[in-house]
Length: 185
Image (cartoon, rainbow, N blue to C red; front, side, top):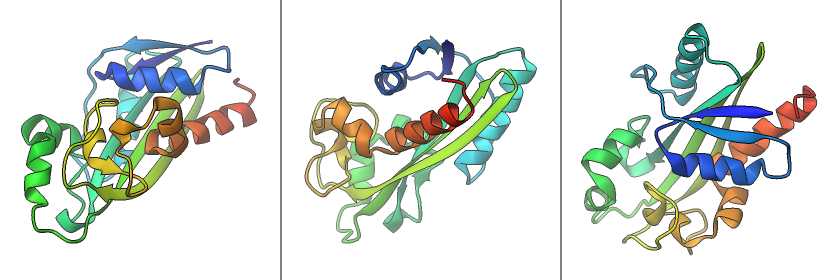
């Protein structure tokens, strides 16, 4: 099966392909625009995007919306994580966190998948902490400043290990389980 992954981020496609490697699924990167509604909920962004892409004729696809939710910043950057990464970057987030004791945060990933007429939406969450400095060279985005265990950042963890604990890895496992239940893989 060929599954179109709609994203601007080729790093996501690489992570998805690693998770689907034991199945006969080929991930195809589709760098395509769709409207991302401004809302507080990842699920709403994914729902609207799926409806638009399906209405435009795209089939057998998946999209996701992910966010880093920092408790001390009242959930910021949250659904605005991509914008926060472009405008502030990791250094800007760390600057906002200077002097802040509560470093708790969570990464969330909502995946929407359409195969034929089958519609699946799942959300995975990875709790963790914001580090005091950037660490590591793997991954992308906020990976160098987020740790799921207080030790290694996502950017220091090999992708196979990261996928077992990350928000995207958890959501992908949920998606795979649902695809199996429906006999799609």
